[in-house]
Length: 194
Image (cartoon, rainbow, N blue to C red; front, side, top):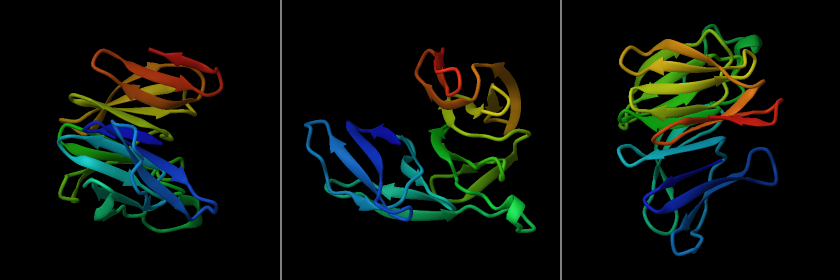
């Protein structure tokens, strides 16, 4: 994954084994900084909350000083109760920043969305009626792809509830937002929907 913050692009690079990885900064002048040893499934950033990474069980706030990022905060994401094989999450699959908070989403076994304050406190947990994959933030909304339902789902950040669904291509995987639109990459169709 990758994200940008203050003229720096941060890239999550997998390691040689499943348990290894790096988060590497690339600066505007083309220089690569030193990587932080961290297995990151996803990266998200915004000037209001900084840089955040998700792994299998945690969300981590990263310090972005020049040279090498470092872990500034670790937010353990609680498992579903009771803990069982059928509800054990594979990953906290994506993070995004919006409305002054960090948002993280689980997977097909743990169908929840978490709202995390920049301080690291979990402010809300939203149960989702579908298997989530990727998220993006726009003012007032978090958008979640639902690959098994071929939908893009809007969660209202004022109520922390599902507010709308939008049909998209088959198996939407990635979702990104800009000032004017949302972009959804659908894996089975090989399409991008605006």
